[in-house]
Image (cartoon, rainbow, N blue to C red; front, side, top):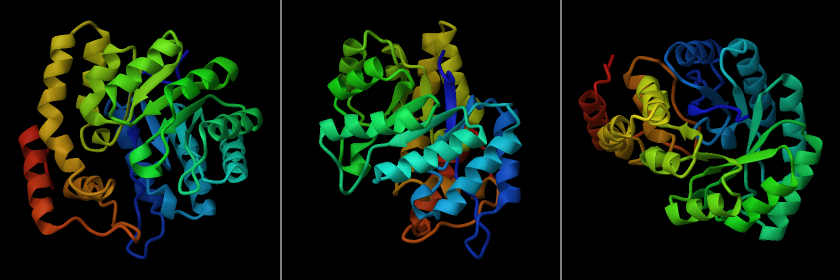
Amino acid sequence: MAIFTGAGVALVTPFHEDGSVNFDKLDELIDYHCENGTDSLIICGTTGESSTLSEEEHMECIKFAVERTKHRLPVIAGTGSNATYTTIDMSKEAVEDGVDGLLIVTPYYNKATQNGLIAHYKAVAAEAKAPIIMYSVASRTGLNIAPETVATLVKEVPNIVGVKEASGNISQVAKIMSLTDGNLDLYTGNDDQIVPLLSLGGKGVISVLSNVAPRETHDICAKFFAGDVKGACELQVKAIPLIEQLFCEVNPIPVKKAVNLMGMECGGLRMPLTELTPEHEKSLAQAMRDFGIKLA
């Protein structure tokens, strides 16, 4: 059984003016998503600025999310690192804190061969006894998980259950599903490709869009699963202009501005990320209004 089906939010991490994590605001965000159709909470991923959190902050956020979600939604923790032993330590601690699953990005910068990826994921899975979703996003890491590697890991390791596929390559996704006979939990990491990946047997999306349009993102998936493919396609297409603006600069720069435009007061970004440019803020705000999102 999949950790979740539908739209899981890749949650932003709110900060105080001094740059520290704003746990009161994080609590509000968790409630907001529990009450507005989100199907799963993904904490400390790319959108959550995990790479600029200290390890202590990272683990505090994960533990807090588990405690405050109170089983209303599955909680999936981002615990990937470019060091296998760090990934193991963080993953084991997250499991002890009660997460429902782990989202583990490939090693980055030092990268690895495909054999290295197999060894990495097997080592983590042997120590961290929770369902693992591999995360393939070569545009950020410089390292793609080949379809053959995905198939090997899913077939040989019981608790490696799926992949977040953010390559944008539909042909690669189709090959993954072919090599695994569809026996894995496929999630897209691209909000503009939700319906295409669902049509290949996907379970849902790990979504930036859900931060600002949780109900609508959920509905894209729910309509598809209910057989209303036309309705799902219409919602997907309607969201494209907004999705484009949410990625007009490096994620999560635009989405952090978007939630603040909605009045959520999630604070700024940690360097080296910088604030959205005024011209992009204007176009983002217009796309949000056009989609029907009320601004503060």
